[in-house]
Image 1 (tube, rainbow, N blue to C red):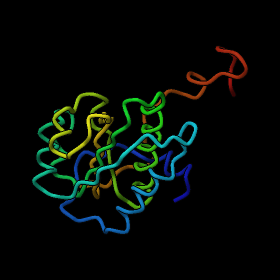
Image 2 (cartoon, helix red, strand yellow):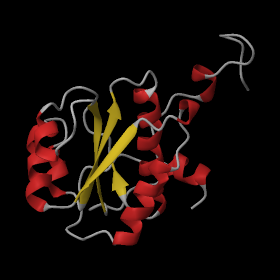
Image 3 (tube, one colour):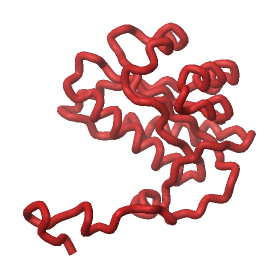
Length: 170
């Protein structure tokens, strides 16, 4: 799938098949995060891949906005260096890279939680206190056939301007 097609069709997935994702696809997803650009090439992130069923269940308990994480084939916990001025934005770009890479391989995901809401994960995952958790990304094959590209979005003219705010883009 080309990049634009992945962006055009990607949707949040919250129900996963009970089917493992091959190691080479998991590796490709995490590698896409590592290869993501970052401000000043600081790479202020760390990615913890979780496949252990008991740990996935615990993530689902901790992440109250994403209990379905417990049913994922795997999850990636995305952390960033607290001291980094650009940690949140850089790690956010890596999140999107992983979600798009997974989607291109037929693997769905969704962003669960947001920065500083996962203090319990430090102990669970051995994460140093110099990091904060930005997100948990559960991954797996979608249960339902998803209507690719059917999104409810504002028209381009409502969210984009040319040269100055309010001047029609189109």
